[in-house]
Length: 60
Image (cartoon, rainbow, N blue to C red):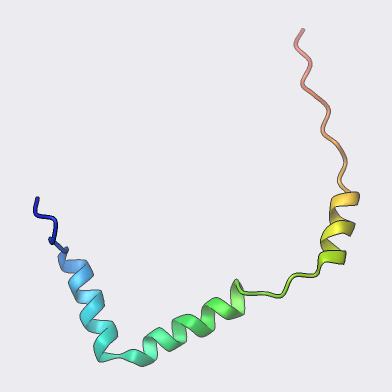
């Protein structure tokens, strides 16, 4: 296979996104709404301190 081969799906997506740049902006907004959250380190420490340690499995 040639090194510069791109699939039909990749070509379609690239063409679609160049013709519709608002879709890319919506993707960025959705990502920030779901994934890019500010971290609360105090809350993380609280959760870590409340974890119950797992007991090892005993073989009989």
